[in-house]
Image (cartoon, rainbow, N blue to C red):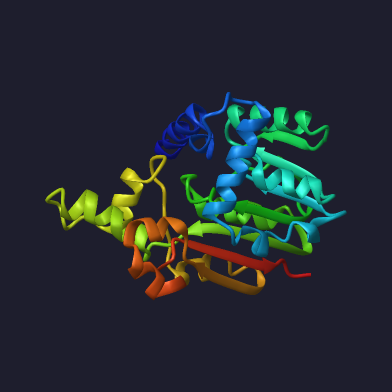
Length: 254
């Protein structure tokens, strides 16, 4: 199937370099490597803690889907969560396992597909995924899986890219308008040029439909440093309205 072939290409892309590796020149796996990655993440996305609520995960069964280099995952572990992390790539799982060892901590890690999570229904109190599910070919199925493994009354927090954002517009100008192909859609440009093949970005309405299985649904748009890199002062004027990140939060019905 085409989706399976695409998923393999996505996996191959992230096996070459886990998300965040670009932000450190230190030797891979050294304490300085992880410290530089964590510091840069805090600079680029200082809003993450307010959405993730790391301290609020203490004593709860938490699943992070797509652990990358484990920056958020380690913060949940440090806060006292009963944490499980999954990633499509062996590279990410191996590097996060090493990071846990360096800090003398333990958590469950597993290579797994977000579209077919290897957990029973209602296994977790919280499910968290930041900037990951828009990369898998069937994002809607991954969202259904995230909700499935939540216990009734459990909370979800997911970040997905926003189609109408300065980042998207910047990519369209570069890869459509200036490339002499102004008819190319935002979605097509992002699928072809943003990170791994097939990357998607969404509208608020699409996300409302996708996460309709959650109660008390909140969808917040966030302006980011990436938008400022594209639009400069204009990004300050538009604030969150043309931000690159949608943060979706809600609770599974009891």
